[in-house]
Length: 573
Image (cartoon, rainbow, N blue to C red; front, side):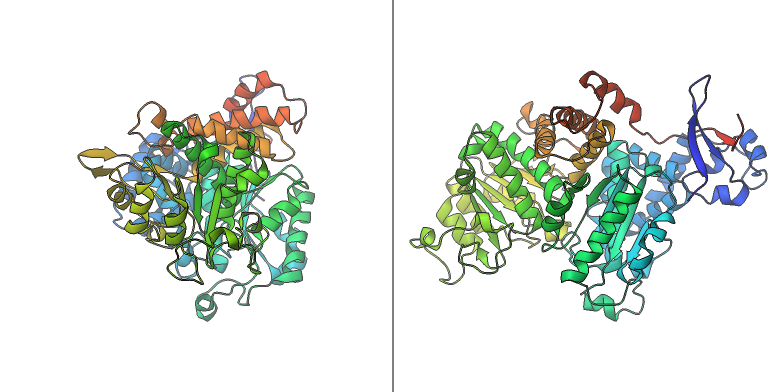
């Protein structure tokens, strides 16, 4: 672990970094390196004289140069590589640069470009980051975790790489997802990056292309499953609980057979969260709450069709079910508002392949006996839309162009303001582009996408498209949990996050504005969500000694911003 502490001066209260590192090791430690911003006194004390150009620069001057270098790359993938290299050299400079150009650069380090980085991980490998826990090395798990760089850990993001975005099993390359997620926690949620840890659980891969690739860096073995996988996860959770009893454990991109099961098994044993299920659900529900308010069509009266019934699709649906019940429906009534479609078509009760998460949404076969179907043995999305006349259409299928013009036109024929959310990412996996939706619905649709799109000009009106970006939800949830010291994440806390995000909808003031705020406002949104989550934690009695009146001040004080701190030698006062 790195030898440094962030301390406060006893007299002035000013924060400073205390370390014994000096010379080249200090310059090559990204958490500490200030590059040309080291003062002349720091250069003398820490043996840096002559190791840097003589001019002392400000952080702002360094950002200007870094942005010039960033813009020098024409490919978003090359820009992603540049930014990750910068983070490997100077962490504060990296975060300051991205913060200054958040809406422009976030898609480069996060979705959608991170998908390209994941696929090319082994061939573009430059430097390790985070912790790799291989099944083959499981007997050394605790020792491996003790080898981490950051000594104090508040948030861990972990994946096994099985179900990355819309691109599936990517094995060892999945590490780039926790890395990117933690960047977003710091950029949008004010979480100190020196207190975070990305982890890749290498359980093998079933991606034959990776197994055949001579450059592949992961455990070259078919993905483990069943009892072996369960024991691996149990050992991991037990070790995390032992070493970091108060950590917030964030699961990411697990396979559909494991994601919900793991969340439910461990959610009462430590403070844990699955972003694909819960984070996606929060942001999609927030957009839906805003859309329902704008259309003056209550949530309880919506007819909701979801294409893609994996972790994300059922997670979104579960969040909406929770909201419907809070609005007065029984659970049975709430489920009757849904039609879920997966690989086998509309989910039906007599299908033996249904997962536990899908089963509550399955329809009785007699309900569709009178339907007109394109194929008698397969009930497609087109069939469902034609027979149900939905008011809400949500896509989490990773099937590009699945929302065809015919389907969209049919939906608009029976709904004045259809609510259409193609949420799959990256961009090439999106179920429909905003311009296609606007054309098919004659500009009447309320749209939110899972990937960023430029504003669309249709019929001489410019439409700004809301992005259902999880960066609007999980940073605030994490900040609220850390600042409140909550022991668990409750359903009430997730609902508080939903309502808080929905309240920030720009469309309430301007009908042509997007349903959700821009990532430019992500920090403000995160603080708003964090305060709601922390207050709910108090109501749910999941935190000790925290008082409501303290919350605003605690969140503002703990919100990390990228800036250089002065240095002192270890044990110097």
